[in-house]
Image (cartoon, rainbow, N blue to C red):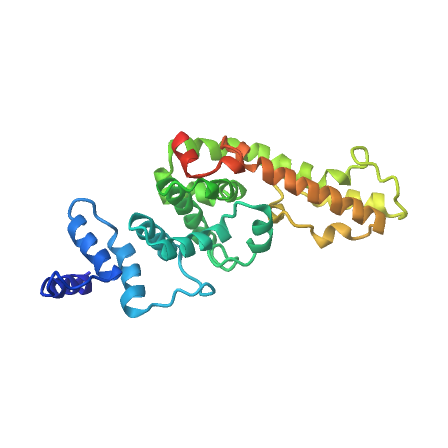
Length: 279
């Protein structure tokens, strides 16, 4: 923070009657408050780099989670809406609150990209849960909790102890139901005793469904994508493919609608900031 200190010292020599820019207001607020209510020096450093060095913050530029979180904390505290909104949009890409956004972004967001090692993804999931509670953004929680349920790494991460007790209890409690629900909701149509294939025209459809159902493991990790897998159509007639897509799509909507309830959270439509305070 040496650079910030020098800026503050230089500002003191400027007559107080001179109009202050928003950047100087932020520095002055930080200077006046940091001794008692300290902002993270890392968070402030990210913000100052944008303000004074014009550090790139383009929508399509990958940024580490710490940078996004820093903009959200400082942006919310000092009511810097552009910084907060852009950071929230990035975080919401990874932890979506709508099914359409989730299915279109889950494989291409930079925060949880598949080339990150599991420990990095686990750290992001844990830190996102903590940040959502800290900033009262409960709409991020259901997806973050779901990611924590799919693999054990997040619950074994060193920062797990910082997660609220209610959240640490909710995640393990949802693991068993979420092992069964995706397979039943998305692929229940494979069982012809449950969903009869009345218009089936393919002699091999029954065997193809059986073979595909044997490949499903609960929890079927790929089903976190909630999108129709092309492999499910292998060996099926057009009628059975259409039937499968219909039931898969309906099941995805049902699973998404119920997702918050698996973690004892309010429904999606109630997951606004005040709901965090009720948990």
